[in-house]
Amino acid sequence: MDYLARESADLSDELWRQIDGTVIGAIKEQIVCRRFLKLFGPIGPGSTSVAVDGVGKEEILEDGIGRIAGRTQLELPMLFEDFTILGRDLEYSKQTGYPLDLANAARAAKQAARREDELILLGNATLGTQGLANAKGATKIKKTDWKRDENGYSDVAKAVAELAKNGYLGRYALVVSPDVYLDLQRLQPSLGMLEIDRVRKLIGDNVYMYGSFGASKAVLVCAEPEYLDLAVGLDFSVGYAELVDFNHHFRIMETAALRIKDPGAIVVFS
Image 1: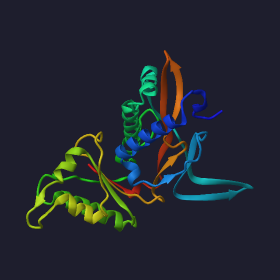
Image 2: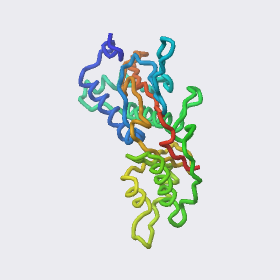
Image 3: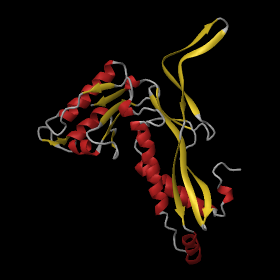
């Protein structure tokens, strides 16, 4: 049986294509962290955990026994969001030829994307996981008032210099809360350019706003896969849940987890 249980639904291939297109399109519009994190996988929907190799990983051989030190196992939780297509709406579309309104699917897809970003940035207390903004071992830099002078650019430049000094070279990415993003939309008269454009030029254009990040939040990472990546078991997929009261219920789901292999590649502005 198909893991997504699509064969249990009497729905046309064309409808499934419309649903998939709507869901994936909405996720791509909404998603933030996948724009800079490399993916590891997908390694399959049956995978429940993935190895994380920390700094100093090595194989230790002694007394005829070999073990790997510095390796841990990370759970791949399932993230999901449900939506419904009413049976009457589906029949009306068939009868009239009018396009089916898939707004529910798009809304659920955007919420699923936000859920992944929240897990990556903030972690999850129930799962006992850390995110980029609260990772143990990350470098912390005191955030100045980015509404004033060149403070935003100066703080980011300081963070970049700190990462480079410690050997973290590569693709840099800055994620900020909406209020901080607005703070960077200031014209610097002496240069004739917005401060955010200076920051983008400094780190290769990778500045992202995350709407549910809180207030006055910013984190800079060196997003090379040897330091950080996103492990994926099942990538975003739409499955058929059930038929209830002649209405069709669907589930958008994925299994994924942030792998922090070296927290030194993260700078949190606090």
